[in-house]
Amino acid sequence: MWSFSFPLIKIVLDNGVPPVTLAAMRAIVFIPILVFLLIKQGRKYIPVSKEDWLIYLSIGLFTIILPGILQNTGMMYTTASVSSIIQTSGPIFTIIFAIVILNESADKKKIVGSICALIGTIFLVISLDNNINLFDSSVYGNFLILLSGVSYAISSIITKKGLERKNPLQILGFSSLVGFIVLSVISSFERPLDVIINLSIETWFAIFLLVIFPSFIALLFWYEAMINEEISRLVIYVYLMPVFAVIFSYILIGEIISIQTLLFAVLIIVGVALAQKNSS
Image (cartoon, rainbow, N blue to C red):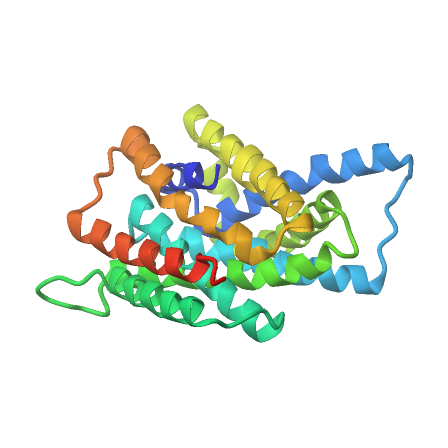
């Protein structure tokens, strides 16, 4: 589902929807979630403590706000396929944060694998050619995508802690609410109404798919899985993302990935496989 989001985001951006406006529209998923929670609990409101709001604000910042701005803006300058591969660097940062913050084991395979994957990611972000230009727009876009991957890694650590207090639906609903409010304020500078009123049915359908699948169902499944599993065991599945993203991007928008990009992707995946391999 996350792989499916990359070509869909590219389609919506290419149809004139500003990046922050798109991020705000995806965060509107908070409405059905909170309505469902209210009905389920038979309440007129859902009690939220100060500690709970701190969790929701933190998760909203690193899961909804920063990735929404960074990823959507970055994809205006690079391709959906490359974006998906760069974002798979997220698990490497998750491993690093888990070692530093959660005191998980730091064996040699994790360290060597992390370094290998990071080297591949750096080369991929720069998109080396005969004339390296660090100020090229694609490099700028790739760098923003990389930062969004770091943000998701931080989000995983915070969410893992948050799930000890709250259930996945509450976290997703309230963090999306936080994201929607902040992103709506920021997107007002993009004059979104001028664009929204002229969107085609196809663009609205793409936005609808983004809200339902990557922003709701995929995140909910991810949070449910995080309850009983270690993050380091789950993040390996993120590396399947570019495989499906390349396929979806080819089918939906006709993107063809280069041999050079594939080689850097292999280097990243090899590093991840080494980092995730059981050290026992």
